[in-house]
Image (cartoon, rainbow, N blue to C red):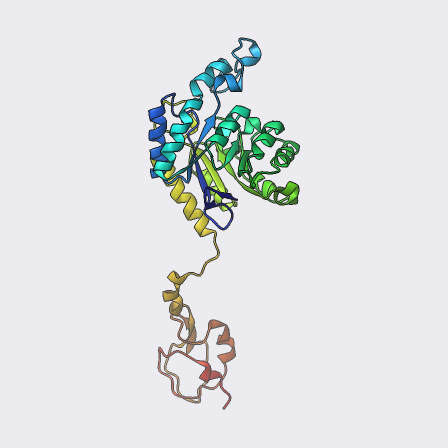
Length: 348
């Protein structure tokens, strides 16, 4: 997969998505400043959520439209989304600011109008949020743009994930992000081993004409889970980001210093998992154990466990050859501290 010229896959460090979401607090200036901070903190891209209250729900007082539990308990969906929305009118400014910053941007889409807006603004990728993963018609509508697609899989069954991936036919590659849709998620519920299922089956890479990468959309409160996901092969890590502890998603978002620490830790973890020579150890190779004389030995005397031993440094025969020496006749005078070489095993 390639987004805006950045290759994404196992041979590259994880692609770090800075999810701004609702953390602009309804303030465009704060949204732009948050983009600045994301760039400085090491994000590869910034992501928004492209909906308005009227495009994602109804202005309705029925109990079905009131949140029953969780961090937004008792709030009407319409009121919540009205406060959290990123107005469509902002997106040209967002796209312009991202270009000026030199950072990639794109957004989650929630209906045809948001897909159309992403098309007009030439967003380089499309995100499908976990709650929309069951909306195959929306995914198909977005896939027709021929852009890379990233799908979060929170709450989805295996069948729903297969159906969603099938719907991405026509996209320029797809990525499946393991996700637990809690806000926040306790570390014990992160279930990172599910990434192996997303990555492993044949259907995840070859079926339906798409090649799926895997990654993590994380709602835990720290940086440990993204680092662990990296070790388990995540090619993408998405994390919520905020400049303020009072923004709507702040409880499961990282502030700039935390995100920067995560970015460094994730990239170090990725580097640590790559096959590599270790030139830093070369200087110590001569210090390994080998066979030395630990007493003066006269020519014609036998080698014994008291006059030769395996010690550091490594200038003599390897310790594995010590049994071959014991009982043999010493071919010449040897001084204490002299390494024992192949010459000691030569037949006279």
